[in-house]
Length: 158
Image 1 (cartoon, one colour):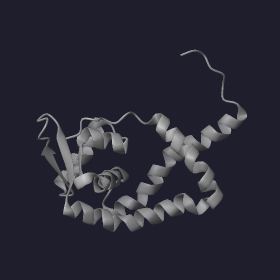
Image 2: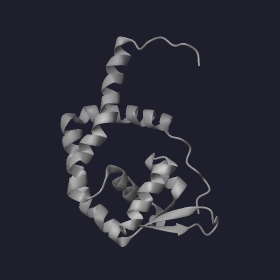
Image 3: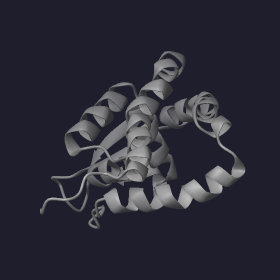
């Protein structure tokens, strides 16, 4: 990669708050969420992803891609959720080396119970500070940035 020019004032004014948000927002959301619900933000993201998946089932590698967690991190989160009865791990019938994560009834109930607290935190931390116009204009910009960062998800799901 060749040498690139330093950030100009406009780029720096965009980048510095963005990196602060990326660092501080998850911590701010989790500080009260974990004691209130017993879920980390990663736990919550996994439960949401499984709740939205067909049959509440995703291959572990697809779950990692969906939640933007590494394979080692998703394995630890799924193992913890499994120990707590919120998720089940099942061998993939088509590939015995792979595993699927399946949302349990208890996991769905925990997700539904945690949703109001999560929604309140997200509104207080983010949306209460933005106008409808801010949201309308920033949404597509953030979506483009997220899409540029996303890896291609696996296509060989069970």
